[in-house]
Image (cartoon, rainbow, N blue to C red):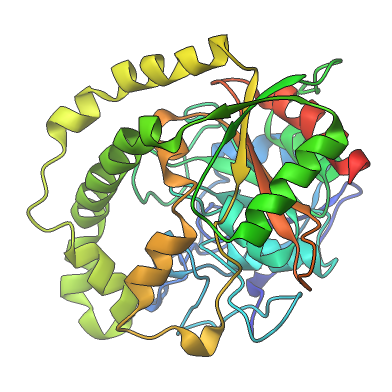
Length: 371
């Protein structure tokens, strides 16, 4: 069971950094977790743009991490390079697609890891493995040199064992980054129909942190999740169908199946409407400073319970609370919170306005200290 696709000699005197194998590192092939890509991948001519801060800081790059193939699904299962073991329970999926990045920091093989998040791929494995993750504002971190999945939503963000690690990761990604002096005090609690134990864990964490909580309705947000689905399927088909058609035996059946769903989808009008939707969604932060809801509405499934017949159902269930925030491009954290009566933690998702990472992390630190 492989956390890393490629191990590297971690030269440097800075923090240990694991890098998802979608991100180019000079001299190392980028595989995207896919056998068809690996077969012809050449060593990258230069680093991806998002690596510049890590290089300047002397980060010790320990390796390129495993992922759900082509970053297409949230389970973290990989038929070519093995499936990273969930450190909370090896019988459970590690979450994806940034599975190796999550397990690298959870098992102390790295201080910080970079993941990508197109539809929850930082937040879902963070929730599954009991660590912290940050989906950044769409467009904030350069994607030059990053293997694309759905460019309308692709982002790069840090993963770490705690919020201090996320802050350290943001400082590698963006020179001069710092958290806000004051955390948020007003939070909009979005009610979902998820596992009552997880819902209760989120409520308890918010109470412990002492926030002023306003209840908001999920129904107002469904349009954004629907838009995400149509655009996502269109873009992953557009970018990946030729690879799969050329190498059908070197792409997993689960990924080929999800890509095939995009055949014939149209998303031009929806993509043109993204800016307006994002502006509309942003008005919610005139009422509250941040939003709060579970990262996942369920606990991670067992790996042996996932099959070709139900992989899509699992994917939809696990990402039900996250994809809409990719649609509107806002930053989100995921962090573990205790769940009464469960041996596994729940995961709290805080959502901020575009560009609100500094406020999000300052607030997440308050939650972490309270719980």
